[in-house]
Length: 108
Length: 113
Image 1 (cartoon, chains in turn blue, brown):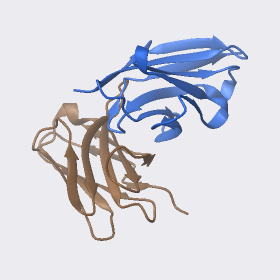
Image 2 (cartoon, one colour):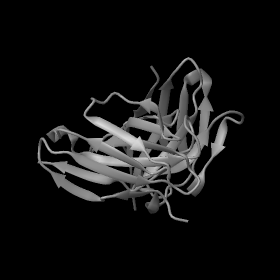
Image 3 (cartoon, each protein chain N blue to C red):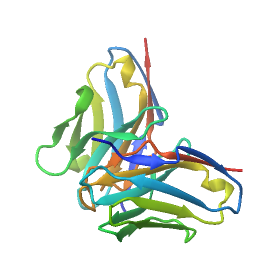
Image 4 (cartoon, each protein chain N blue to C red):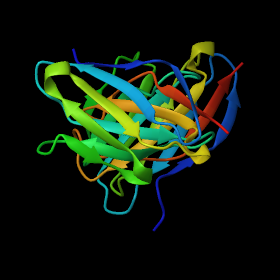
């Protein structure tokens, strides 16, 4: 069965620092992959998606993710963190299997 | 355009009771999915409906049921509530079934006492 693993339940960075949130999937067939963000007391909002084609995917708010089949990974990055990026981030495969989430804290 | 709307936003029930949660998808979206999000965890897939037919079911007991109406809105029903059913229930809509981009509502927070 497909599964999604997010390494690190909590990541803390300083404002302006690189953000790296890790996601690995387990599947013999490369899945459709998604990153969603959830702000307190809200539903999930799509950041970006990978289906086929270019392995570097750009999303909203300056986030991007790279699909690496050899590593079964789909890590989310942002070059410079902003205070408004503080939220919970979820990686998902096939739109039905979500990781446990990573809470991003941004320190001033 | 209105997004995905869910009702009620908050509700409190006691063990053994029944609850019905409602969801209206984005106009033009024909698929609705339901997720359970327990505090501190990722969303767990419960059901997906497309064109009023069940297209997928997660690992939940038969106490959980759902349906989709001709206008594509949906209801999630949970019978014989347990304390462990306390969670945020998220509804998401998409154009089609399967691995499509989901647009989520803000959720219905259920507390079971």
